[in-house]
Each structure stands twice: as C-alpha cells, then as structure tokens.
Image (cartoon, rainbow, N blue to C red; front, side):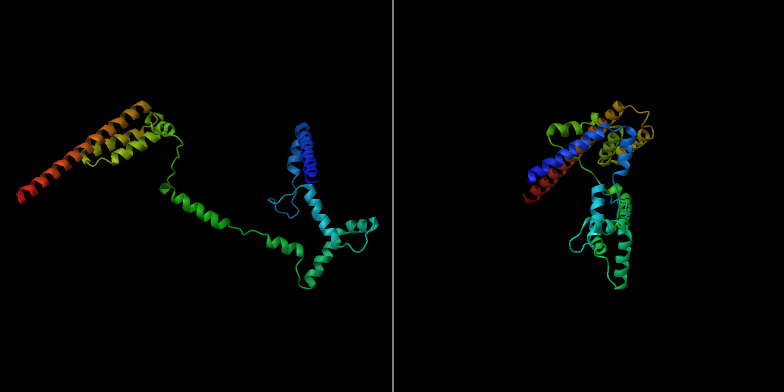
Length: 233
C-alpha cells in the first residue's frame, strides 16, 4: 500500500516537472514567485497551496459537531474568518491562549542574530590569526602544491618572507628584506620567473647559513670535549 502511494506521488511529481518544462517564460516566473505562500506573514516560512489549505481545514474542524452535512460545512467555511475572530476573543476573555498559537510558540526558535553578528566581528578582527591548512590526499598532490613554480606571485613572496625570517644573521637578512619590500611594491611589474629565482637564492642562503651554524656548533662541542678530556687527563 505504501509503495503504491509512493508511486502515485512520484507520478504526480513527474507530471508536474513536465508541465513546468512546458510553461511559457512569463508563466514560469509567475508560478515560481507565487507558489510559496506564508499564512503566518513570515517570509521565511512559506508553504505550498496544499499546506495552506490544510491549515484552513484545521481551523474549520474545531467547529465540527455531530454528524455534519454539506450545508453545515458550507456555513462554516462561509463564516470561518468571523468564527475564528469569535474564538480568539473568547480565549482572551477567559485568559487562555489559542492552542494553535501555543503550538507555534513551542516550536519557535530563538533569534541569535545579535550573537552571530558579534561572532562575525570577532572573527574579522582575528582573521590574521586564523590559518587554513590544505589537506592533501596523495604525495603527488602535495608535491605539486608545494612546488614554488605552481604558486601565485603573492604566495611566492609570502614563502620568501618565511625563509628570510629564518636567517639569523642580520647583515644577510636586512638587504634581502629590502629587496623583498621592493618586489612587493612592484609586484605587478615583476615577472614570476624572477620571483622564483629570488626564492631559490633565499633558500640557498638559508641552507648555507644553517650549515655554518651546524659547523660552528660541532667545532664548539669538540672544543668543549677537548677541554674536558684534557682536564681529566
């Protein structure tokens, strides 16, 4: 039974899709702009026509009594708006809420617009502190992404800055920083190939600097070791 019902709804949806495809442009725009209607007045809570009709049917059923005939329903629907006003007035007189309104209140969501706005402002202020890391699936993807030749000009200069900051010798670091500032100011005129060459120069300088530091450290360690051994011997 459920399968048959689902099949019928699928056919209805299919026919509706075919009809929409055949609409003239003006009719299609009209249907799209009017097919969702809000009975509550809230533009974000639109409903289709059958849902709106169901809401009206619910309002009418509160006036159902005993065995109803066609004339009873006709009277109800002809006077439904006034009957609803009378019902709401009665609830207000006896100090009760309309059960429909209570149900809507129980489903109402809290409005966090102020909190969301405050959080967005906080994130914008701290944007410089937020880092986004790319997740690579394969080693090939990482290699392609980290290849300096595949980077943009801005990315190349950013990576140049990172390498310059790792150089401890100020006499070497200062002229390189000045050259980097010049390239930043004239980035539109700079060729990408020249930026890549500059990056490789920085990388080579950094490697030499680190090698010298390691050599000095080894020499210092050997000197300390010689002093210790000489002291004991």
